[in-house]
Structure formats: C-alpha cells, structure tokens
Image (cartoon, rainbow, N blue to C red; front, side, top):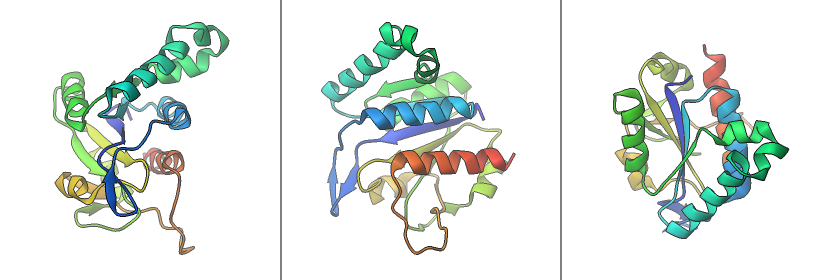
Length: 182
C-alpha cells in the first residue's frame, strides 16, 4: 500500500454550507499517522494554508519524532515520521510526484454520493499507480475541490441511515477496506 497516500484537508472545507479553514487537531494528526503506519501507507499529508497552524503541527510532530517524546513513545515516533505538513494540495501532489515519479490520481471522500464515484473494490485495481486520497475536516471537502479531483470514493454506507463519522474513523474504515481488498 506504499503507492497510496492520504491528505487531511483543512481548506477548503465546509461548515454550515460556508467554505472555511478548519483548525488543526492533535488527535487527527496522531491517529491518522498511526493508521497510515499500521497499513504501510506511502505518506500522510496535513494540508493547512495557515503558517501558524503548520508551525504548531511541526512542533507537535517534532516532539514525537526527534524530541523527548521519541524516547517516551517510539511507536508514535515511527508513525509520525511518515507525516508531511504542507500548505496546499498541490504541494502534496508535487511531493508525491517527486517520491513516485508519477502524478497521483486524486480521490476525494464525501458522505454524499457524487459524480465520478469509484468503489473501494474498483480503486484496488489502481493500486499499482500513485493514489492520493483526500479526507476533509469540519463538514467535509468543498464541492468545487471535489469536482476538480479524478474520482470520489463511494460514501461509507452501513444501511443505518446515519452517516456522520469523525475523519479519523472514516480514514480507518477506508484504509482497512482497501487493505482487505488485497
């Protein structure tokens, strides 16, 4: 799964129908890094346009990767080593292109079914090329960004009629489903 990359998008995301920039959360950083490391994901990108938020993310990661936290919890250090903190989605795409030699296919996630929807089982057939799966914070990724991507993963639907997961849960479920398709 090292050709699969994850991006956690903080802008443009939605809140009550308006486009906003969401705040960084320590739980998202750590939990998604741990899932990414567990499943052998190629890299995990925190995408945030605000320099101060990126600085906070870097300080938090630094504590665990090269600071005292590395001694206290080497497992967390190992997970956070695959995290990259960038200001734009294009920065993440450029980084992946540099790592893999090919521009990644971009795949969004949404709680709503959209045009260009791809199932997890169909996505597994593309795992030999670089894939970048975007997960949105707050109320999810803005429609304009979703429309600009190559595909959008089908929503998680358990048949319960309720579909409002935390981003950490959604990442875990999608990555596990991709892994299980191997």
